[in-house]
Image (spheres, rainbow, N blue to C red):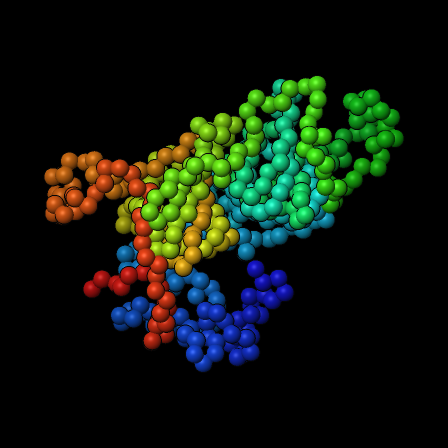
Length: 431
């Protein structure tokens, strides 16, 4: 993220010859600017105006595979392009259906709490699923039966607060935390949260006095909700001191240690799946944490239970999506991006970089489900498959009756196109 040098200024400096772009016009020995042509007589140059940094980051948009066809909505939006709301205790930004129009089932929030920073006591109409991206935090909540919950979480841990359950989050440790939140409604808006300070400000003092058995004078100096949303606070003490004595805690914890789960390890990567069968309170969000080694493929598949909302944690990759009626598009992703797959659309995800690609798959569902293309065909009468695809027995033998969610591959070679064509991860166009 460029904090002191905007992308527009960065590109401007590049084109003037002052600063070199890693993926654009640079020093004498660097690759030329990528161009929208596949090198087979299709396409042409782009004289501009243009953003060469974005072009280099999206080779499969600039030079789509020849198999792409038709029109699909945008299936990618980056948190780097989202508005950041800053407060005394940290910052937050969101990607909802307002930013990514196709994302109707889930909305996402990226939030940073400084050490001691507090996301104030609040609740939502939506269920909240959280994944710790960095650091340490303390979460607390109370359910409708008056049972309390408090726990410390760190990188890789999850939490889930059902709709209407009041809770708070505080950054702990030396540097606080950053986390991803997913809400089970694409129309969610952080500005529509029910805040403790906001409600207090909109209750007559005499009503507050009657409710709490105090004088009305005690409620004349309440803080502004604008200051309380994410505010600087004092780091908490030991966890044991925050546990409430004399009353019961919730029967099922609101947190889950995802990285302590034994992964499904395969040649080419690993998968961890978590839904209500393991994390009992998480009844509206099911998820998978996927890691692909360089060149590996999240196999061709689809999901029969809902749309897929993705968050890319590390690395670079591409996703191809098939939406029926001859429509197919390919999008590129990198850390900090959100991806989306419409319900039942066939797709694959490929690691196109030279380091691991890690991402989260989220579904508005109480269970995780996918259908493997390879397994489906392996479990279908062979003669029927051959008649459909006009393939021979060698193809039938290549099928696998056991689901293989990850297929290993080789890391792509990095070569500079001699003619200025964009360095696409796509295979050469047919014909």
